[in-house]
Structures are given as C-alpha cells and as structure tokens.
Image 1 (cartoon, protein in one colour):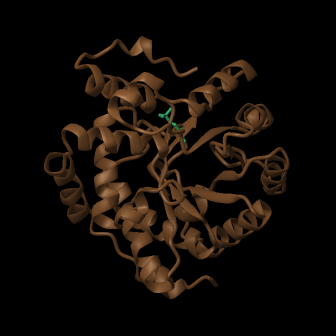
Image 2: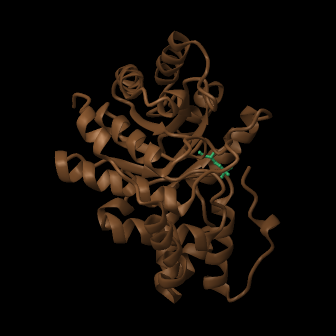
Length: 307
Ligand SMILES: O=C[C@H](O)COP(=O)(O)O
C-alpha cells in the first residue's frame, strides 16, 4: 500500500502497559503434559534453524540441514505418537545458500538467506539489492533483510518505506522478512512505527533482530510488533507473519512466545507461514524436553548436537 504518514504519526506505544502485560505472560500461561509435548513438536515446525557464524562451512550447513529434515529421533516421535516433522526453514548467509538448497532438495524445507549487508545493513544500497538478487538466484525461497536503523532513529519514514519497497521488489517470488534490529531502535514507539512502515512497503514477515544486537528478541518488543500486525490486518485484511529471533534457546521460552501469538493473534499465527522462531540452539532444548516426555529422563545437552 502507499505510505500513510498520518497513520504512522498516530502510532503510540504505552511502554509501562506493554511491559506489565508482557511480564504477566510467563507466569500465567503454561501448557502441561501431553499438551506440552504437542506444543513443543509444533514449535519445531516453526523454527528457522539458523547458522550465521563467520566460521560456517559447507559441512556444518549440511549437518544442520540433516537435522532440519529429521529434528527429533524417530523412536521418540513413535513413543509420543507424533508424525514425522521438519523445521520451518534453514537460515544461512548468502554464501551457504547453494549448499543448503542442495542438502534440502526433495524435503520441501525452504532456505532463508540473510541478505542486504547483514547484520548492520550498511553496505552500498545497490550492493544490498544485488545481494538479494543473488540469493534468490541461488535458490533462497525466503530473504531476511535488515533495515537501515538510521531511517527510524531520524524519523525518515519515507526513506525506510522506499528502501523496504525496493528490497521487496528485488525478492520477486521469495518471501521477505524485515529485520528491524529492535535493540537498536531506541523506543517501543519506534518499533511500532517501523513495523507499520515495513508492512505498508510489502514485508511478508516482520522480525525482531539479527541475533547480533546486544538486546535481541524480548516479550515487550514482541507484544508491540504483534499488536502492529493486528492493527495492520484490521485495517487492510492482510496477514503479516512474525519472527522473534536471537537468544531464544529454551523450550519454556518458546512456549511463552507461542502463548503470546495465540492470545494476541489467534491459532492462525501458530503456522509456519505466519510465525517462525529465528534460533540456532532452541531445537536442542526442545529435543531434550521431548525425550523427557517419552522416557521420563533428561539427557545431557551434548546428546543433541546441532551441526
Ligand atoms: O535469526 C536468527 C538468529 O541469528 C539466531 O540467534 P541465536 O543464535 O541467538 O539463536
């Protein structure tokens, strides 16, 4: 849609109310027993299984892809009466896209690439656009772009809109997730406004963080962003997805995020086309919890290596 600056200017965020509501979630909402096992299995299908490290190698990416294809031991799934599952996607740097596409061939698992000068997004603009084009050409079905934080910090909503619109166009058929790097945006009002502008410019998902900021996904930021998604759907009928990312490594945290989505946006946002966790180590803890459900005993985390 065109940029609606009046709507952007009207956006408010009541920080203390948001913090109160976010703080009430972990204590109030838990699922137990077989329901918990079912929620955790669902959580696995929502993970963008990620490796974004300077020392990534094709071997590590291939092992990660094998894990994405079979995230939980078959005998555990059998004991729990769960069908075979896979992760939602595998998320890598551009250089690793071809390796991941090859390793996931036939699985139906999409490859997500972080493009546009991830994580700072400060390389020349034409190179950021070219990086998207290259990642799509290499087979990435999803592109995670990073926005220019300075456009938010200086209130230049037109520049943010134009940038996002161009990234959207370069993605073509690929889904685009807009990484806001919320830990660097200063206020929750900025987070709400940036969310709205990215949605107006065509983002399929809005995502909290690169995982490289000093503060990554948090519940107050998530509440702010999912309320923006709710407002955007109410006004336009368009459903935008949500991806909290960075520092989510415990099964119980995943359950809290899922409860937030269910309460704020409904069950529809607990499907992989509208919700993902960006996480490199969450799967290991979920596997441990599922093993506990199946056997009654906890295994050591080294028994659930990622890659
Ligand atoms: O988008 C994914 C994040 O980079 C993963 O962050 P994490 O390593 O803290 O799970």
